[in-house]
Image (tube, rainbow, N blue to C red):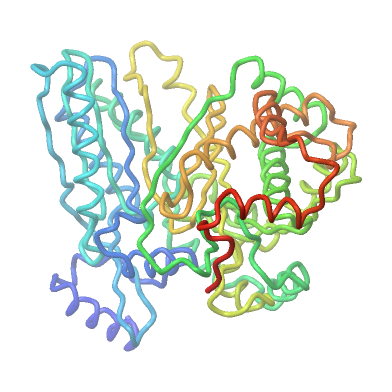
Length: 505
């Protein structure tokens, strides 16, 4: 052990007051981890970046064995045993414990009816979210297993986003179910070795920052002001700083519409992610009145140049700006294909820290690069679990979490395409968000209906919305053609001589 490492080990151990033998590794944070840590420390008690996974387990469950499967998964993955240290003088560090005790609670609610259970689960989730986590104590996660029936359980898994991304959640979920199945049958785990998260951190530190800086400076050249969202209660710069009050609205595409959308993407050789990003860009353009928009996108961060990236567990995703010129005269299909090519270019530099990109841009310091974020949560799921009748079935899965962005669109293209808009309800009225969902849905339909039409011709108003606007414009009234304005004014004065005509200041 080098003197520098020993000093770091000593400092860390003093801070967390634990024996050195329980430290497996110490290393820096990824750029996104640093951002999440900053926002978490800046808003204690807000529940920001506390992720809650809530799902039903159907089948004969052995709680003791199920807990043991989770404990083995925690033993396998260093990210699940990690804590975070931060002070104002030094760069933050993450510390991996060799061993941790899993916070685990079991409840029996079989005597409650369905309505009471649903209400109590929501209350439990809210209490758990606001409790948050003490970031310098591992593990930064906890479990509550609720028995609702003889063969029905509900699992509430809470963790801090610093540990995992959605892709990693899917890997861990699949692994736990596999471990449980083998443990229940008395078999050995026989799982493939895993690559520790610290290899991702080491890979990040060897990326070409000069090339990334050149790319992002050129990509954002001439962009000086964040794209206004256009549906705020008030202008963002006039609003007093506050802790966001998060709300969300969710909808599922109808089966026929979903089939048509998937067929459209396949035939036009673009991804569903590209289609949704295109629709979001058009929506922002229409709302803001600008033909050059920037919004945030989430990137998986699992580069093909990183060995074992697809099976690594940790926070590999990154948040990046996506700049899209919305050209009214462009053909829809060609424009979407251009957007997909732009996404491929961005992926070559997806490792870059958002803070660095912000610094390289022409947006003034203190202003965000973007205020809306779109995420496409296309995670690997275990087909073996879905089709095996003797394994636990996972149903009614919900992800609950919140970001620090004013407006966040999440697309979940699982068995059914679900779309969720999370927003700051102090900045956006519920009705405005509802209209935005309807407009986005109509734009998606219009792309499918007219793929060879022009981007500028795509309608975003539904039939009822169009009729409402036409009704608002029926303002015609009779006007005397034989009198001038001053004569009409004099007649009004004679009718109401004491009424105020004008007020100023």
